[in-house]
Length: 544
Image 1 (cartoon, one colour):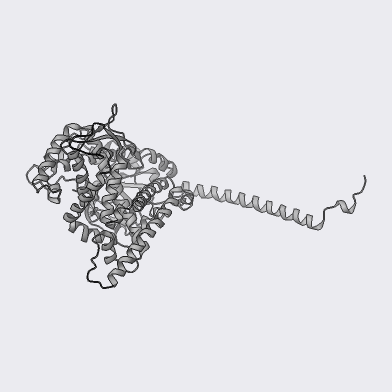
Image 2 (cartoon, rainbow, N blue to C red):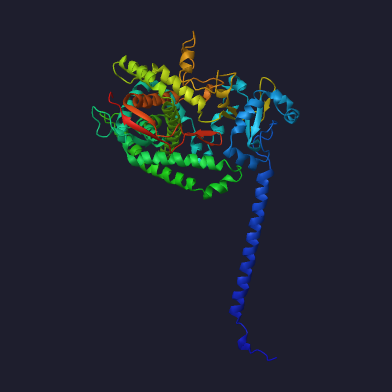
């Protein structure tokens, strides 16, 4: 065998390169193996380690494995109704295993989604309705995945709530007049209204209902929140709508995962990227306006008159931290999210029910016409209050198509023992079932029947004329919450819905497309959404 020449051996530099390459490959393999091992351990931790409400001993509906339970609940929330019927209702017919598991919680509570969601009986609503800080916290409980959707800015202070209670509700008559003015302007965008004359349009115009109502409500809300001319600025309107859409997408998507995995998951979620983008856009739009207003006020010009809008009210009430332009812009986005999206859902559902039940249209038109004429032709707060049949129809639509099956969410900050001895430990979070009571024969007569004037007739009974309203809350009607934390914006929302439906009933004809009926709802987690792509045909009425 011939010996190799020295020149055939690799040089020192080449050997060093090879050694470094081997070391790098070893480190890479070690890093990959370590990462996979850590990921597996972390996954198993998330799969089996207790989180949230595990200190509360209550029967679980469905899978007891958290990740599997969360995944199933994402696509099927029927256990809410089943749990309400069995545990919060007819406990005697519940399984013997569940009774043995927790006999002390009879008729009081149950869990869903692998135990991560705790639901207590609505019978506790009156007992807990006015219990607030430091014992129970609504703000911490209604997170809406707040760290990631950025809704957690509302936990920094109650600035928004103070302004709604002190300004909006006290100026409701003026705000309704302003909202009606903006609505009339935006209704001109409906294609069926183009080239209007004394004759109705001969051709029916198809419209995507959800998108149209989102547009109407966003414009009305913008008029209240930022005033004119920004309320008609397409960049601002688009920014608020896109922010709201992506906040919902992100919040719902993250519910699939345990809290411990969410910081990692959200990094790769496009909706999170979009939220950041639109939040920056909102800051760029709002900051110059805030600076301009403050400079004008500081100049001391007697001719300067402060704008009468939500942004200015927050500027006047905020401390130094809350009054930062970026904070005010961010809070405007969140308030638009809270008001526009849920109100759009309610209007769309009620509108679908009107199309599905045309026999109610003429009685409602007659009531609307009389209410407006009796107030001098004005769409005023007084006129809207007189629209009791429309209010009843809205409430019945909400009963049969609730925006959510769950509500009255609270986080326990201080351990509390309820009147019947049930103990809720610190850091537990509970809901109440707000959808199922609407289908409970013990609460509603003939619950499977849609009776549009059901609540109007109830108000005719002695002593009940101020009850059974769309905005009314009680232990069986908590779509707006109940008690201390009932939604302060529900009065504004109710009147906006009446304005929109009232004008549509008075000025338009509408029906479903030929061969179609009421669109099916879309159910995700506990939420119930109207079909966002369903179309309805419009044309202007000859009498309008």
